[in-house]
Image 1 (cartoon, rainbow, N blue to C red):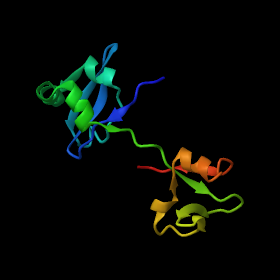
Image 2 (image 1 turned 180 degrees about the vertical axis):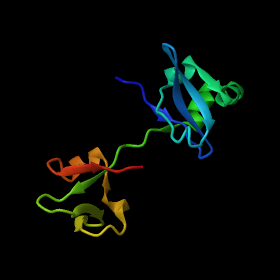
Image 3 (image 1 turned 45 degrees about the horizontal axis):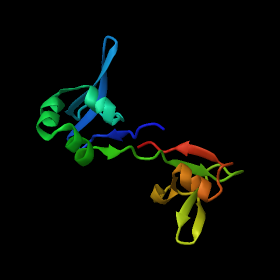
Image 4 (image 1 turned 45 degrees about the vertical axis):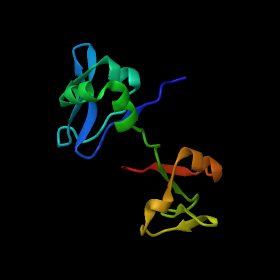
Length: 132
């Protein structure tokens, strides 16, 4: 069983990995163009080394509290599911189950996780990863 991975991104700071020689360290920095996104990490990754601005924060708060209170589970990957034999139609969820749309109005209802793809029996359809 693999250990749960989480991310830290509170809108101002994020965690990412940086390689120093053979070692990889978890860094916490302000979000900017050099550090635009958070990398997933495990509890063991967090214990193995936190440097930068995050070291002060984690030392004050404590590793367990940082893990429990400030990290979030990695969001599930979502996909747009294309209706077979059409060019632009996608499946969307509605109160009755599924609908088919061809416009790009509100695509939030057209994003499916792997579990939802299986639930709606869409495994044989083309899936396009949602950029997020």
